[in-house]
Image (tube, rainbow, N blue to C red; front, side):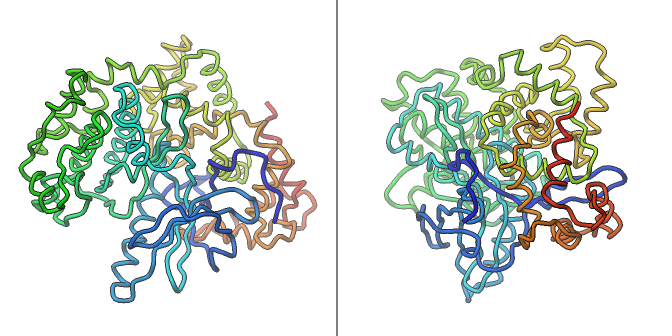
Length: 497
């Protein structure tokens, strides 16, 4: 086994990042974030512990053999009788997840298609399911519930802006990344039933879990608002420890949901605030047209009363300044520098400094939609940092940071620019990145290896001239290969101001 990185493996992950070259700028396309890996998953991963099992298959905690880093491996059994539908469901989940870049949604990194099943490699989150925490600790205080729900609404708001419906939100599909005191960091998982949705059309397929499924889904005419109903059920459970629609018989539960009547006159709700009751009632509104959307939920008076937003953003002005100084200096000249930075940000999110950047990102992200606009950046620079006449600089910053040219700065784009680059250019971390590109372990990154990494799963091929130019920019001895020393020299130039 290769040398393990000396970082917290419990929260690590890895992805294969693909790029498209556009003029002089590398456009890192989040839609191509996941690569199909050939061979057998156990050639690359060692199984450590079974985390769960169901009719679909199994989820395992696994260790990446080369690096020693921990991930989760979801195996979905192939059903011979419904192979086509089974494959479509898996490809759907992969397609949905690879579009997403949000800190409260699990990352998928690669997948395998073997004779016996499909294997999805995702982040390993050591805290387990929110469901287990509810069983052991609920009812929660409003402060704890508010912190959890704000993260859920932020993720759902992001998804809905991407026209993605989850359709199976429940505590079993929400994992705890970490817990500090009574503050939970959560991520939503299992996008197997998610769907890209046309907001002008109604969905008909009945999908979801009893207890959490919306009444309009049962009536086979629904849209993205079904996720907000599920959020209402989750909030009710967090505050009471009980489900609003319950019975030992699933059929009876579904009938109760269709009626849409629930009870907040229970002992557990005696001391909850009027604001929390109001939010529950507006989420468990039977008519989806009257039900809150994710933006309205995030702006609800309950969150303002709890001061949730102020509690999760960065309040240390010096840290915001430090981040902004890194952003101003961020301008990688080499195409491969950009790719390696993207790779490292994906692979080592557990670094302490990277977690600190999350709070700074939330400070910029005023409306909690998982994206930073020019207006939001301007507000932070002028109102918090109190810097004037920065409009031109902001335009330049956006041109550099917006690597997919969608008009926003998304989470990982922000992290790449904000992080202190010195922590990414140690021999250990650079060797980890180098090994990813050096597929045959020859000690050299070749044209062929770059071609395979850049072009896999691409709808638009990258020309041979572009790949050759990438190598020539770094290659100092003229052999059209990149050694580790050349790779290291290239990356260390990032920290030279």
